[in-house]
Image (cartoon, rainbow, N blue to C red; front, top):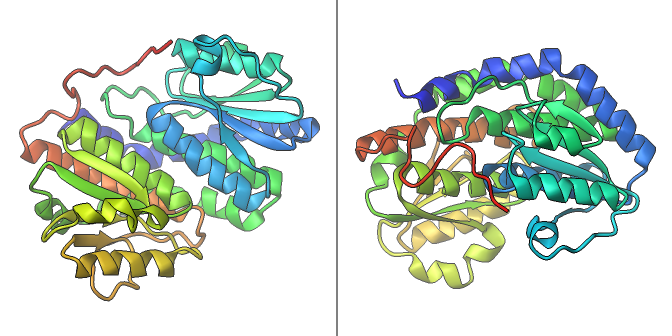
Length: 338
């Protein structure tokens, strides 16, 4: 068994550990964020962590009606610009907490007036040191280069903070009910989609919070399978990208039980009509293949179970291609960019 698969299997326990051990740091972050009375939020992240931040952007805007903007770490580390972040709360997401540009930008937005929250797997990291408060994700050691359980626990930690800020009891309850649903999601059979992915290119598609999951899926195809995958919002794929579609072109669409689902399914079905080998995590589709999926009872937690099912599939694709997903070529676990 690969380290990646072992860590995918550990996701339910990692989330349960976060839910058990995380209330103290979560409540501290919530109280400090409320005291800051932010007009908006910002995020600082790269890679999979940036996809987690995109998910939190949608959650912030949909739950709290406050925009969240992704700030470019190079604004501080390369260009030396100090941002005015008065009345702002910043979410810095990094599994290692060690990348210099993430650390410097977090420190800079704090100096610019932001209250900063570090969501990290290392509560003693440089990122934790410079943030206003730290929310450990309690994922335990993650040895595979491909982030899986740290991505999911980062999603859960950030969403938990936002749900508490919104005082959304239904969402908080759904978050606490996740572990057994994540275990079920890890066993969903996506072998039909895996069998359709035979070439070197594909699309992933989503809308709203599920688009963040689509972004993460595209990255995992690249770094574990050496497949050129591109992620698009369903609102964008019908423009220029649609020209690439030809008979048998693989496409995976990530849906949640939210307001975007019907329209997203219609677009995926339209692409199937143009020849795409289209797969979708929805039962609403008429012309695309349905992928088994686990719904959570809340539209904002649905994408979390979906990415776990995807992870289980993409690991099998890597192995089928003779690639070790634990050690992708050219990559290492901690990427320290400036």
